[in-house]
Image 1: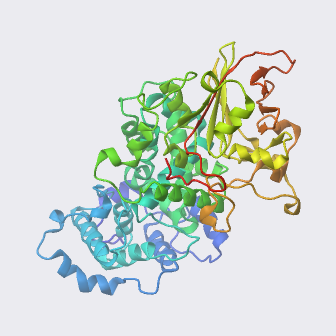
Image 2: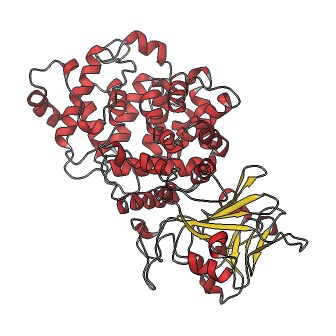
Length: 556
């Protein structure tokens, strides 16, 4: 051991320059809440010795499956697996997906040790099929381990966690892809300015968000990644979403209004993260991350499950070697010039709109269900064409060339529950938007300001069926984690962001400019003057199911 406590894998000069060993040497607290506060404050961040002790304690306390490989297993198998290969020439396991091993402050011996540990993990965890984050995790843990065997045991305990409420690291392509989709959904909600920039400068915004884990597990400098990992071990996976969102917010703040350094925004973000010390300190990054009023852990878990279910229904569960079959390419081709048809919006506008919808629905190709030019202006015909489809996208163009619309996550047949009377319906994922004269998206205030709402007694209401499925007791079937509008008594200031459909009219209303479509389909202003006729289109991504039967996301 080095006099300062560094192990033989650490480059002392690099470590001294990155993280000085000046902090406290002991930690006495045992309460989780206090640990959370200390982790966020960086209590052990300035002490190499204490951080090593804390990692050992936190990882030891992770609930694991009964048979979890430990240090003695590593000692038994490493010689057989590595053989006569030199550490530097060892291949990486397939599950890292060609991810480079970050060196951080490791010396050459340390870099080789990471490869040895990864190969031994692959031997003991044949069920781990896709885990590009693991090289960074092992590299970090090796800085704070006595030897390779101890680092191996720590990494194994993280992989073997069997607490369903404490997700730590993605271990399959399905889990990884659904996490990318979930991150895209969260960006849509919490980083709208940054999202708008991504849509403007990238051909496929979903490809950009698919890179989010790389920002953390590979591009962040060691002192930043270690601070994130400190909190991650205490609070879990949600921390990763928070920090990635904060990174995107800082990127937007610095780059908004400036020309990008390359024509590849993905690469620009990676470069920004590598050089993040020029922009923000680790403390400020975490401060920004925890200032975001993120969904609860349960809501994020439901959203993750929904995205996983959508991928399974599409048959996307393993990484495809053929680019033509990859999920991200499919998303981009969903709004391709050759297979998209609309008289109201063009392909570019539709791609922008499609980038706003929840990612599990962006997997599907938008199909034209109703067009006033083709089907006329009958409201009855409108309902006939769209019932049985969800979600749907409504597009409206007035004689004044104004273009607006709405994304509705629930089947229009929900209106029948109100007996022909006008009634509001949908889930919290609905939103309305305007494209002309300017682009603007409006979300339900319920999502962004839950303090404005008061719950209604559940005895007097029922939950609306979630997208693509009827109500089910199985949490995996609840595709939307958001409550429906009628769970709340909404004050007047939030009543301008909802949709309703009845036998005589349907309404889309935002702020002070509602659009009312009455029988026959014609527009009305608030003063009662008509803008007849308006041009109306409805797009959906599901085919009509036979009466009494629901179609799944996999149906086309």
